[in-house]
Length: 388
Ligand code: A2P
Image 1: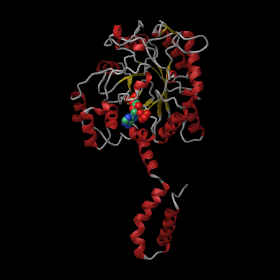
Image 2: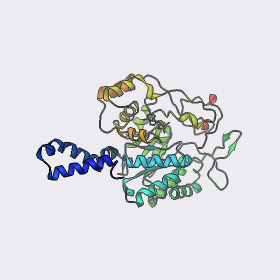
Image 3: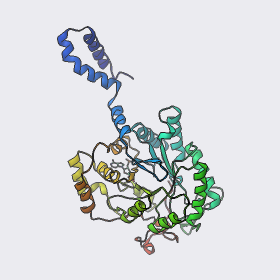
Image 4: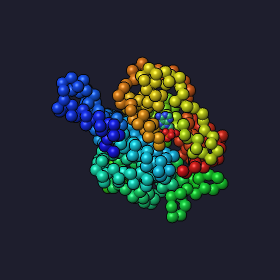
């Protein structure tokens, strides 16, 4: 409804009459209120917030020349159709333009429906969106890559993907006729296709225009450097676990040297991660509760989540917090109206002493390409990731 209630309508009409015809005293006294009311009626508060946000999401430039938003919506674990649709609409209305997904998240077709809804209705132009998705770890074999990408384009209802990443450096074999992993003795069955062979196929898709930029995720520094050296189309982005407890200095320095942008997953410490393992066992750590984060939240009149996100974007890192809650979706994007001082950025670096990798990737601990030298794979429990 255009008018929220009959009282407002009555008040508006009354004031219009006073304004047009009215006696001077009433006219002067009510003018300000009248203008405010008109404004609120025509632009509900949420729209005003959205308009501000839409203008201000900062970007960084990929080595292709394309602009990567420094902020977007993560969708790992967002699989409930109704919930994800509400979340996507809330995000797009609030000014999100970067949506991050993956074949393995099993939600590309839901995302595709909403993207089509917004593009076809003219609410958003395709070229203003930035869609990142990732190759399944079961589709690294050269004969599978183009097939997987075509399936993903179809699910997303797009004819190109803005950024396409190799999801993990650890490929696994898939079942006949689909890309679901084969499980034997409680673990995924290893595939040893070298990264560069998968990359060569991605390069072909880059040249065909289906993939506008290529990148990787969860690679070690050695793996990233080796791929970079062998690649004809250089990687544009590396998506890694990155938050105050796992600041990834080595990978960030290497990415900077190679002109590769960085995307932070789990920027809030992924409070909902425990649902993703059948045994629920994860390293402990909650950056949202860190004392310095809370202190800065009070100082800047922001929430702990906004402090965690802003400290990343201020350093040129793209952050993709996952949320399906419309209020938190708006909260998370509302970070481009303040800046942390240099001293406060430094305080986040020096006063946070915990170091904890929250995503061990131990579903791949038996893989010869397992990337994390700091993880003791001999102690890793044999579990398979819950693909949900
Ligand atoms: P929800 O989807 O209910 O909002 P990360 O991006 O680090 O992986 O974190 C995602 C998790 O953090 C989800 O469980 C999400 O829950 C929660 N979350 C997202 N935004 C906020 C916020 N602003 N404050 C607290 N928790 C949040």
